[in-house]
Image (tube, rainbow, N blue to C red; front, side):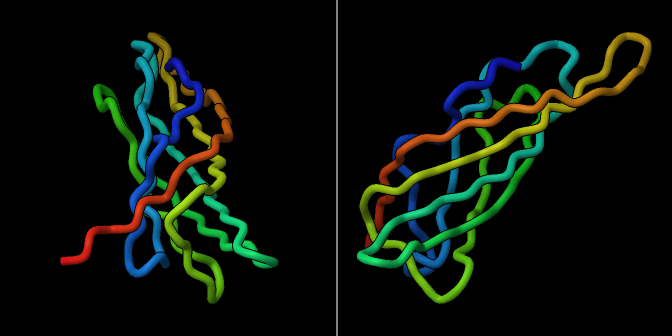
Length: 119
């Protein structure tokens, strides 16, 4: 599995900034990889406070995208604008003899949070 900075450059805010729809490309799937589990943290500095959200998701071949909903921890809410994203992934692999192992990946990016359009 070819992993690199895998959080999209623009992420959609949901639930009045209490959640972030986090997405990103999976990269190419190696033939021995059977799936991947993702965990993500999004943070935004607002004056003297930090709004923090966590979430996770999974993906299996041949998916080209992974997705997770990151939920705010505590009382804050995100605003449209710059934020930081960190993620880890664990790709589950199995060889021809049936032996399983996991390949870890991690990355960090700067991303832009986009407010949902009003209905």
